[in-house]
Image (tube, rainbow, N blue to C red; front, side):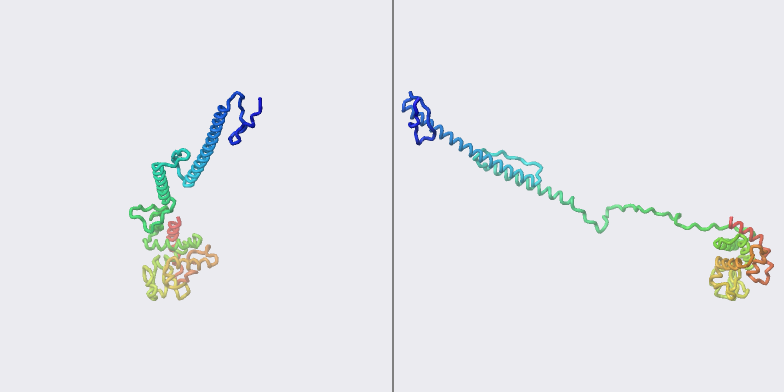
Length: 300
């Protein structure tokens, strides 16, 4: 085989051509033309392929941008319109469809923001109650009138021949002594003394008109003596308004009795007379049994 490299066309697109010696020059010329034509077509096809690759790359970039924008806008779904073949622009009908879908998406997002906004805002407090709103029941328990009312002390039925007014005054004497926590014997002496001095009625004095301004049940004329124990303001027993109160008068008598040495062992008459200094001191003893009966009823 000889070297045909010097017969190659220097203006051709290919390199050295291999051919057989039995091919005529005319056939060889036709074959070279076909070869050059085939090579040119291959190169054109390669360029077309590159163009198609660039078009595909641009489509993918556009799709990535569209998908990223849809994600940022918080779209739940996205309808993808099929891409046109490489090198072709969208038709007018496709453009109108794209614009219509974009407008619908924007409108739906706007509606979503409007529907969500009122839910996240706190309702403004109403300055006045709604006319149809029912009042809420109070959680604070209400107390009944019976629970809050202070029970009245039981009124003790009279004993020992006393009426109700006398029994009420005797009860007041015993209650005052109980507050002072004095012995039972002191209570009997106090009730017996009041029986002798005032017959268990709360006396005002005709000599002291002031005493008649306070609650009283009778009026006496024994100097300025007032109250259940006929105590005289002029001798230091106390003020008229105070001595007219059964509880205060009892406290004054018992305080003086407790200062008498050995009063517990003294006869009732002696103990009472030591406190009262009466002109008829021996008369106190006659009321001891009745006073004892009254104290027993009140204390029991």
